[in-house]
Length: 114
Length: 116
Image 1 (cartoon, chains in turn blue, cyan):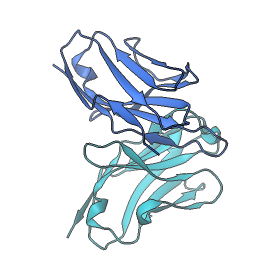
Image 2 (tube, rainbow over the protein chains, first blue to last red):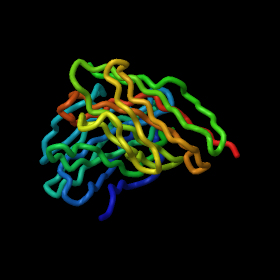
Image 3 (cartoon, rainbow over the protein chains, first blue to last red):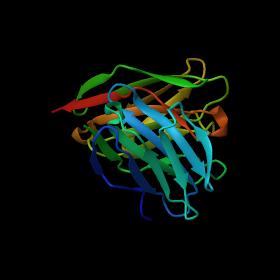
Image 4 (cartoon, rainbow over the protein chains, first blue to last red):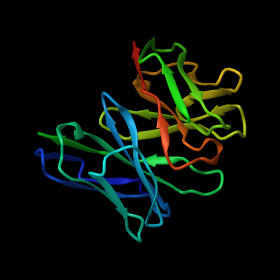
């Protein structure tokens, strides 16, 4: 079974621009979560989608948004990019069955804002 | 609110030596706990999870962890380190305790170095 895939793997954007990152979960997984990883703040939860609905949200500004499609694929968007948005963005999917809630992570998208 | 603290940002061991990575958690309810490993330029790989079924949890690559409620700890161990174990390790707790919620709260991570 294919793992979680994220595209693109690397991205360079200019301050003020916007960016869209894509995540395809493991087949059959309906929950998709997004995390930001930086050297200073570590791994931080952004938001989680389940059946096309945002079910949980971390403490990030409104510039960060996401959505999920009917096939469970998810996108996250960051508008008005700031230098501090440079990070590795990780997507994780979960099967969400009783007793089986572990999250499986993709390789991430490395975003550099200049 | 749930949280985890990883003691020691860097741990260095010799090949063949015991690996011990420390994690303490804070949770008002029985927690779901996880250990993940991250190799350079890669995502996170699940090593093992604690979901209250057994206090000693065995994972992949020879790693195991013991849940100790009295010490609020979930330390990761491996009897004999290999060079390939060099990576960053993260302890995480589910944000809803034993409900295995949808957000993971991570520790700051521990970088493991293995020397020959």
